[in-house]
Length: 336
Image (cartoon, rainbow, N blue to C red; front, side):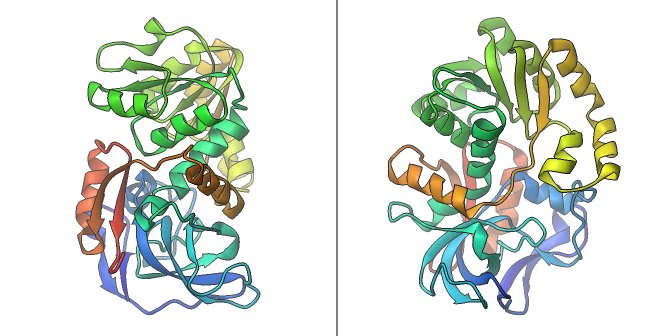
């Protein structure tokens, strides 16, 4: 079968399509024929070796973190799905493998694709959708009347975050360029700040919490717009000690590294009287099924920026790294 293989860490040339052996499912796993796979910034960050301190993979390894497809075979003890079922998943972080014609996925990470979604739409949901859900519902505690700032609302995670926050009853404020304004307003944003013209702290009232998708100076400024006692959750800043313990299940060594790496942001948060939390999302078939139900009910619509044939995945990765996508980039396999 064909797979997008990472041979060594580095630039785009370090990953390429290759003919590889067909995988087999183990206990509690399913073999999925992949019909579409979503791209995410974590893909090129993994290729470049930026995440080696968190997850060091035995190379070579198949890349890709989310997929939609059809169950081909079931491993021992896997009984929730049957061959022929349409499924989607955020695959296990320790394995990856979504950028391939066939992938092995833990049964607990899978959910059934709702009839209302095609494979491309389903493949766009898992990683970004679960990230947004876990950040907003679990980490920020968004509820009716909650005022939330979402920076970078027109991107892959942002388009899901706006819709999920609205479904949870929040008043949503987001940042976008003039090109992205119409999109984020169509998704339900109540207030839109044109970041090319204004700083959000100059034009909006304080918020109960913020979900940062940009990092850097944007994250630093977010601390000052959140009410004292509130929280800023980021997936673009620097990991902090709780990230090592709660999200990665690691010990004091990684927690200490993250303590040092996040020192500036944690001090900025403390000075502002707010909490800083960096989130590594976790795969969950149960939570993915909940997102699927939202899509079935018309409360969640995957925003697709572009699609590429699997043979053109190098072009898709280049488009992702350019950083201008509005919504998700998805690659499609044969017969998708």
